[in-house]
Length: 49
Image (cartoon, rainbow, N blue to C red; front, side):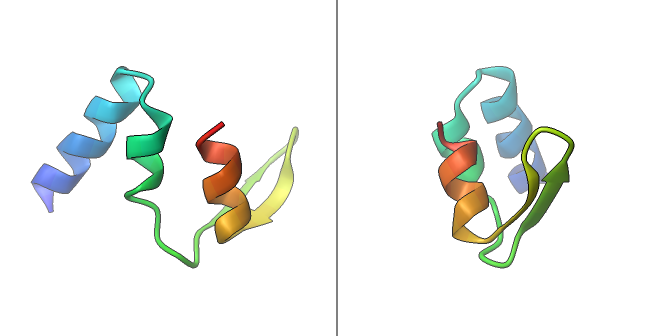
């Protein structure tokens, strides 16, 4: 588990969105003021842009 977290934040630090998205669960839900509520593949698509 620690290695997963380290790899995710290493990708974050390196602005590697594609690698970060690979760690997202298929049922992810993301919400913020700019994007509203995004679920599943919509989060992955927006996260990789």
